Length: 342
Image (cartoon, rainbow, N blue to C red; front, top):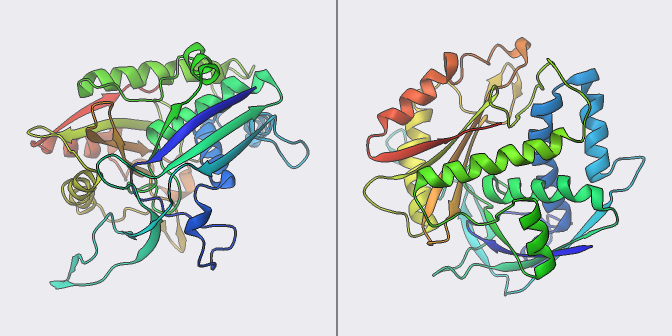
């Protein structure tokens, strides 16, 4: 079984090649190991919310090995990618598209990297993505992982801050049929934010069901000590301005940077969860997606870490998510809709 998709770059894709020091790193484009790694992260986020830290994570590791392979067994599927349009570099300013932010009253240059650009007028760089399966039972785990990555996440450097967003579209009847059978629509409908949130929530519930059917572990389980897509451990919101629609990724990222991320960060002591000498990944993921109507909107995914030794679970977003909810309600010029997580 072979399923084929076309991937389009929505926001600058900052990605390294097999040799990061090579001047041809951008020409390598969308590399299969990078895509597999992103899919694996989202698989772990969903399955981790189901089986948690059961048996000291052995349950999760075994299920992940069945879907993505392990050191003792190869995966039941392979992925191949190749560009279907010219791959040209552009400069990506890694502080959310801000080349010279003000710091202590002075403008300072910020880090920049070469990136695969999204193009202009909805003509972003495109890649062909091909997934070939040796076993049919892996499809209900792998294709939903691809959907989670495409609809909620990003790829490469600064994927938690709006970069590396891709859109995926099935390109042949076999792929369209497989996606339809799993109720996986790889596009955001051209409708209201509330309806998009409902559409996302329904699909997440279906994916949760597919993943749950692959494990016999049930009941009260210790929560995983990492980001999970579960109602008790995360919050998912969609966000857009009230008075206008973002027509470009630049507009979306600039507003999300200034009005949302920096405003929220200003009320916190730390956004990256530095604890002692250990710095953890930020529990706030910001991404930019595009509807079928060519309008952009923001995706905010917030997660709680459960490690009691770090003493951060209740302090970051507030008791019962109060700080995050209060902040979103304070954004009077923005509409936000919560997506119900399974």
